[in-house]
Amino acid sequence: MVDTVQVKIEYADGRSEQRTLGAGVHRVGREAGEIVLGDPNVSGTHLELRVANGELFLTDVGSSNGTFDATGARVHGSVKMSPNQPYRLGGSSLTWIAAVPSAGARGGTAVMPQYGGAPPNPGLGQAPPMPPPHPGYAPPQSQWTPPPGNPGYGAYPGAAMAGPYGIPQEARTFGMLCHIGALAGYILPLGNVLGPLVFWLMKKDTHPFVDEQGKESLNFQITVTIAYAVFGGLSFFLIGIPFLLATGVAALVLEILAGIKANSGISYRYPFTLRLLT
Image: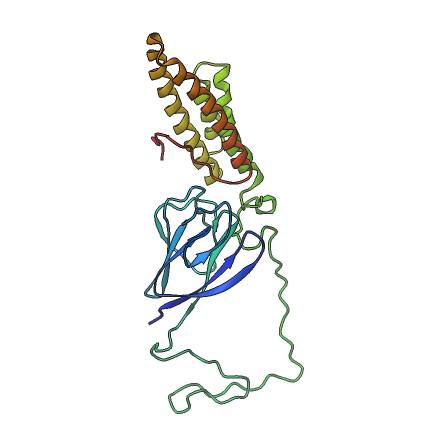
C-alpha cells in the first residue's frame, strides 16, 4: 500500500524543495499549516492536500486569489491531482512528482539489474541477466528541447508570454478590461454592465482567467446597479443620498484595484457581491 507522496514546492522567491507527505490532511498557506509559503498573494490558510490510498487530492478552502491548474483554470472544491501537473497559488506552485511506497509495501521496490549483473532475486523466475553492451555502442542523443515558458507551470498556448503568475499577456489584458470596462457607466446608461459584458464575451472562451474575471466583474456590477436603484429610491427621502455617494466611490476604487490585480495575473474577488454568474 502506497501511503506517502512526494511533492515539489516552488516558492514565489525562486526557492524550491521536495517534501514527502504521509497519509492524511496537510494544510498549505501564507503563514499557517504544514507547508508555509510566505507568499503575500496566498491566503493565510489557502488549501489542503490530502493523501489517501496512494493518491493526492487538493481542496481550495475559499482562498482570496484562487488556485489554478496547469491550463490556468481555477480550482473549485476538491480535485484529484496527477503526477507532474503543477497547481499554482499566488506566485508559488505545488507539483506531485512521485508516489513513494511505504516501508511495509508488499513486494518492496522493484530493482532493475545492471548490465551483466545477476537478477535481484534469483530463483523466482526472473529473466536471465542482460548482456553487456557492445564496446562501440553509444546511446542515441535526444533532439527534444523544452518549449519556452515559465518553468514549473504547465505548457499552454502563449506560455512564452506568460507573466509572473503564469497567465498569458492577452488573458491578463482582457481580464483587466473586464473590470475597468465598467467605467463606461459614467458615459452610457447601464454602461457599467455593458462594458464588462462586451470584453467578457470577446474572450471568455479563449482563456479561463478571462472567463472567471469577466463573471466576477459582471456579478459586482449587477450588485452595484441594484444598490444604485435602492439608494436612488431612498434619496427622495434624503436618507439614500450618502449611501448613493458611498456606493459610487467604493465601486470606482474597487474597479481600479481589480483591474490592476487582473493585469498582474491575480484573480480578484469583490466584497459584498451577489454571485449570480458562476
